[in-house]
Length: 266
Picture 1 (tube, rainbow, N blue to C red):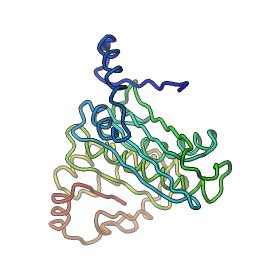
Picture 2: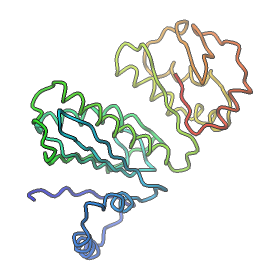
Picture 3: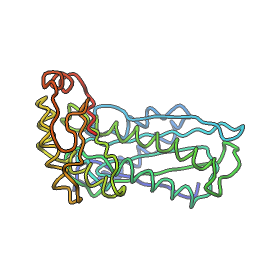
């Protein structure tokens, strides 16, 4: 009742028609409904082609807790958070400072890990609102309840982040990169982002070409110190071991790249 969170999206530089917004607000308020989540998820879309929404339930003690989320974003997608808006709500009871810490940590590993076109924007936001109505014992420390909540929040945010990449403007496939055995999360992130942002990797995937050299080249210029003869690479199967190519069927990998909407590189 005391705070209003204002978000805005649309064409950069164009002024909004305030009279239209005022009239729209009155109409929106009159149509408020507990069943209105899907309509809200559709209303926030711009160049998106589909709604992005999810809800999960989990137990804390005897109480059922719910988390719901929606997001929009399709173009100008690149950290930090890109041209996207995310709205997450829950009935969980949790201390504000713990909620803020949880949200920041999850955003760093989800919304801040995606990219569509490499362009950033002046407009991005993720909001989390918790009303405490679930009746669970208030989370005021990092115990079992906190980490169970964190796991659910991670799931929701990751799902929405992937929905954004799948619906990227002009995108036909989603490329997911997993980096194992890095020295730190920061170095793993640099490597992963170098690979997913590489135009040559993107064109290879689009052309159904299992060109592993382009992937390793991106790893090499990521800015992270790597030992080439300790690198293994998986594209559906292991195709590089200790920095050297293995025997594999280019035709089978071509078919995988052609038939799959989601491509995973490890």
